[in-house]
Image (cartoon, rainbow, N blue to C red; front, top):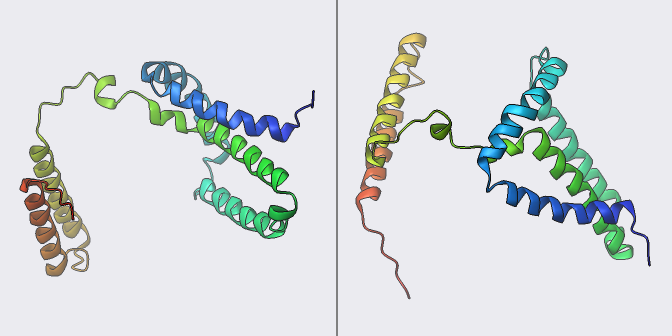
Length: 184
């Protein structure tokens, strides 16, 4: 029997990881208890200790460098797509597997947490229209306060306010219209 290489193993693990993450997403209580309130605070403290003193986003720089490296790798390995297709795809699969694992361990499991209203035992006793109305009031209030603080008419001018009112009315109109599907 042929022995699997580390690239083949990592590529296969990507599929296993995707299935496990899908399975874990069905258990938000587990994610809340073991990851969000267990492992993640520790990871967060480590990153805050290492990078917290830096006055800009280190993650943005790392993403940019990773993007540059990816473009460089694709350019330098473009001929391998034809000559060594299998190993080229194994390299891609192994890299995606490591990136997928790191992304989920370092942050992404938080996407599968319980909704906040469940964690805080809140009841949602409002309609969508009430929520939209309340949000519009908050937007108008925050824009008014911002204008009072800055005394800057470029932030709120008549054109922006008119655009906001028109789009708001247009959105409300869209909510009231029945949805019809046309078949041609």
